[in-house]
Every structure is written in structure tokens, then in C-alpha cells.
Length: 137
Image (cartoon, rainbow, N blue to C red; front, side, top):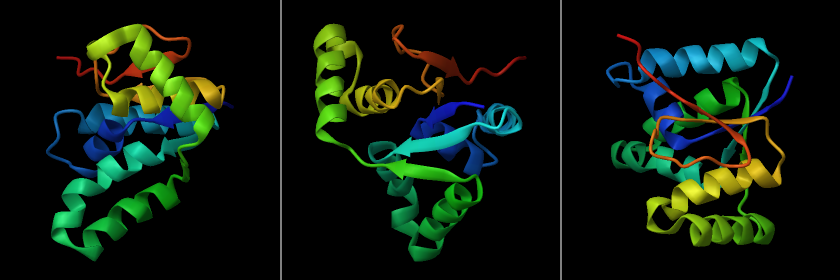
């Protein structure tokens, strides 16, 4: 049992069967649930997940919320401590780490998560385990 923080790309890939990472996202979530992990999605990643559905209306947003409720995953607010940690990460890694990504990693670090699952293979190493979705051909 542990704590897994989800990046937006994982949720987006899971909900879109045509996404290149759909199958590996489903497997990563299933594996984490089988371990008994608790799931958290930072509010910044949650907002990112809702960008496309918001163009389609309330039913599409409800699909995202229904998925997160069923997982279950809680939405973690951005606090002053998380904001400061994200700023420190950005300062340390410069332009190679975008602020939305820094907020996800900072959330994981502040919450002492066991891992972050992401589809973004460009992240540098951090003080938290990062599991990158990889398709195996």
C-alpha cells in the first residue's frame, strides 16, 4: 500500500481509448490499485484533464469526475507549501521543467508519495519515484 500521484497525461490516456498510452495507463493504474495504493491528482493536473472535456460540456466533465470518483482519486489542492516546493524545483531545473509538471512533482514530494505516474518521459530525476508510461512494441 502506498500513495500514487497522477499526472494529467495518465488520466487523459486512460479515458481516451485511441490515445497511444491508453493500454499502459490502464495497466499502471490497475497495478497501483492491486497494490492497494491511494490515488491523488493535484488540482493543477485535474484542471489540465478538464480542458478538452470542458469544450464538450458538462457530460464530458462528469465522465472525468466519475472516473476519478470510481478510482477513487482525491484532488489535492495547491497549498503554499506545494507552491514553494514547485518554485524550488523550477529554480533547480530551469526551463526544462514546466510549472504544471513542477506542481505535480511538488505535490508528490510534500505528500511523501511513493510514486508519480506520468506519460512525460522528459522529466529529470527527482526525490520521488517517477513511473513513466512506456509502450512496449
